[in-house]
Image 1: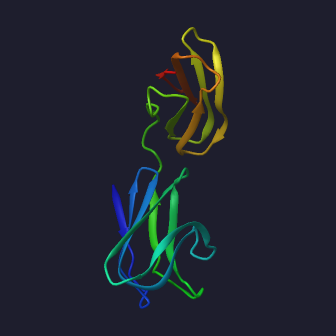
Image 2: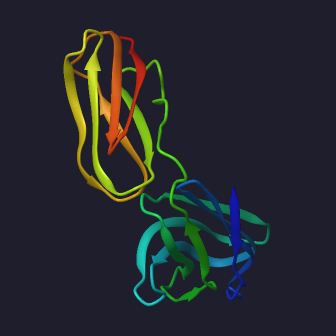
Image 3: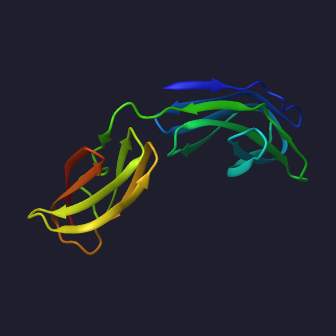
Length: 197
C-alpha cells in the first residue's frame, strides 16, 4: 500500500489538520481530519488527470459546527493505470468554499495477469469477479455451468491494461457449481464458484 499527502490550505471556518491518499492496487482511499468546523456543509472530492479540468466524483457531509476532531474518508476504484490528481472542495452552509492542496497518486500497471476468486463465494444471487490484465488486448470473461454450457458472457471486448471488476447476477440460475473463465491474449484462467439458494 502506498500513500500521498497534501499541504493544508483550508482555514477557519474549517480547520483541516491532515489529508492523505492511500493506494492499494486500484483502490484510492482519501482520509482527512478536521480539528474544528463552523457552518461546514461538506466536502466535494474532485479529480483531474491534468490539474486543469476537475471533475466532482463524490461528496461527504460535514459536521456543521464542531469543536472536536472529526475524521472523514472516501474511496474510489480506478480501472486504468496512470497519474491522477485529487483535491477537496470544502463548502460552507452559505455556499462559500475553499480548496485543499492537490494530492497526486499513481495507479501502476499490473505486473501479472490474474483472475481473482469471486466474492462472496458461495453467493446468492450476486457476486463480484475481479481480474487484472498486463497488456491491452481483447478480453473474454464467461460463466459456465458444471457440464460446460455457457450461461453468461460478462466481457467480450478490447480492454486497456488495468484492474477490472464485474458483478455477476445468477438470478435465473439454479443452485450448483459454476465456472468463470478469463481469456486475454494467451492468458487463460478458470475458477470455480458456488451458487446457494
